[in-house]
Image (cartoon, rainbow, N blue to C red; front, side):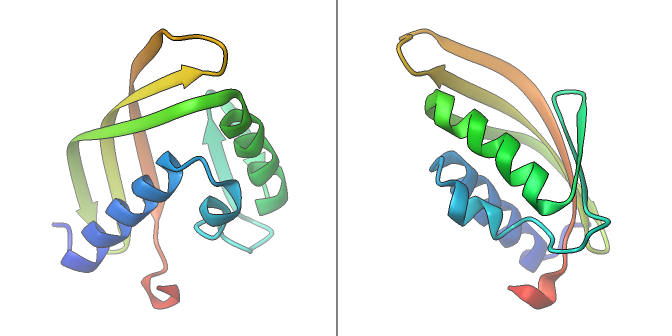
Length: 110
């Protein structure tokens, strides 16, 4: 079951990602050295590496939008499925794909 706090965190996380503001998005990434993130079959260890990768991706896009289709939660873990829409700079075509995201959330950090 997803708590109201976890559901709000997910909404804020997606809304922030969709702004393509890497500095704001990076606030959602853990400071811990053992932080790991997998994006597009590539694993990134540490906040710096993840921020650099997402910064590259955000910089290539003129639009990113996620439509949540399903979500599940247990404790402080949330899994959500979305239809992600990307529009790359210099290209008017939308690229849509199904994305699954899993986050372990420390709600004490806001």
